[in-house]
Amino acid sequence: MNVTSPGTTSILERLSREAPYPNARVIVLDDDVNTFQHVVDCLCRIIPGMGSDRAWTLAHRIDSSGSAEVWSGPLEQAELYHQQLTAEGLTMAPIERL
Image (tube, rainbow, N blue to C red; front, side):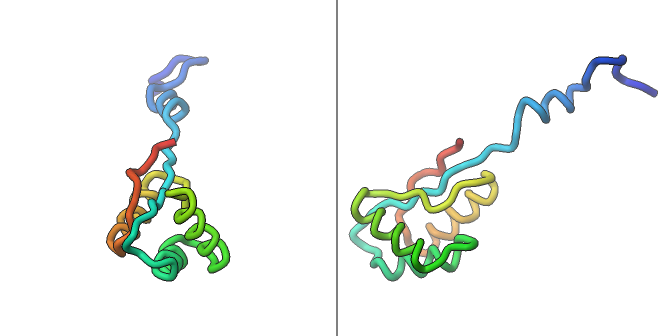
C-alpha cells in the first residue's frame, strides 16, 4: 500500500532531511592541576588519530589561550571523548553543539 501520493514525501523522509545528526566540539580548558605531559598522554590515548606532535601543540594552546578544541564531529562520539577526558582529570568545557 502506498502511503504517500506521487510527488510527496513521508514525515520520516522530511525529518531526516531537516534534522541532520548533530555535531559537537570537545574543548579542554587550562587549569593549574594537569601537567603538559598528562594532557598530551590523555589526548593521544583517547582521541583517535591524535599524534604526539599535535597533542603537544594543543597542550601549549590550552596553556596560552585558556582552551583548545581537541576534537569535533558527531555528538555521540563527542560525548564519549568528553566523558573519558573528564575521567582522566582534565578540565573540560561543556560540549558545544555545532
